[in-house]
Amino acid sequence: MKRDFLEVDGFTPDRLARLLDWATAWKQSPSALPATLADQGVALVFEKPSARTRASTEMAVVGLGGHPIYIRGEEVGLGVRESVEDVARTLSGYCAVIAARVFDHATLEVMAGAVPVPVVNLLSDRAHPCQALADVLTLHERLGTLEGRRVVYVGDGNNVAASLAFVAALSGIELTVASPPGYELDEDVVDRARNLGGAVEVTNDPYEVVKGADALYTDVWTSMGQEEEAEARRSAFAGFQVDRALMETAGEQALFLHCLPAHRGEEVSAEVIDGPQSVVWDQAANRMHATRALLADLMEES
Ligand code: CP
Ligand code: NVA
Image (tube, rainbow, N blue to C red; front, side, top):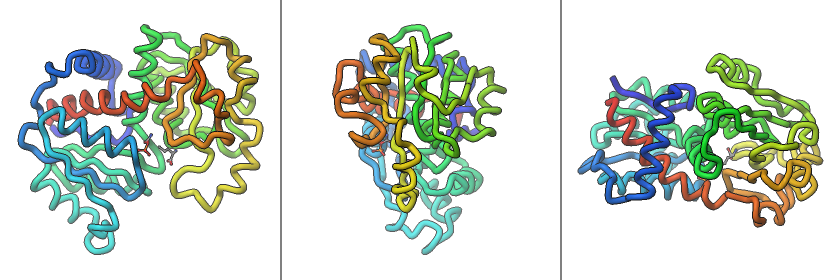
């Protein structure tokens, strides 16, 4: 049966552990990469801009012997010139996997229902699961065992925070999400993460919860598609910048993570993201390593 990857909660702890093992092994020995996608296409459909996701996924496909095809949503007229189903069905005639970055998560569900090949979420309004795999790979590299580690996400309870909650639940990480009132992680996400066995808490005060944390994580205050809310969000998130004072409260053991792109002076100060506790460039590089393992996993199930 084909396996889609629309959100991390479709995984099990064992499958995630195997994925981390593969990603780590192939990062250390690229010559051991399997030719899982030999002579096969992978469609990469983007309705929004991207630096990391596009480049890392293209290189992950190439690493497994496949051929990436980058397609802009507006170029094919996704849902305009042709229905989402018809575009997906067409692409599945040439491609072993369809991966897409979309505004509306429902677009991915429509694609997944229309085609016999795996559909991968490269970011939607609700989830960013490929990012979460790179995040947990980075934490695993830095911290070793993840069970009982404590991560505090400071900022918007958005797509990145939701996928982080699920990957934390599957890997034994205790996650606290500190957001301003009105911008908390969805209750539905919290419930689903707890049902997976996750220790997920939400709060409105980052200073109360960061002391002793293994890592602090933040993301932009205004996500793609929310640009008209930017002004209101800047006011709402005042006091939620990850700056030197917050990192000092956390302690010198705390790593700093950010999925990027970053806005220095908004959600993070320059001295933190460019400082010694920051692991954001490892995180960015790990996008490719995690995606290689993900694609190998999905193809095995197909
Ligand atoms: N982190 C991430 O998804 O970056 P891009 O938007 O550049 O792909
Ligand atoms: N939350 C951000 C993540 C970008 C990688 C967005 O959706 O724009």
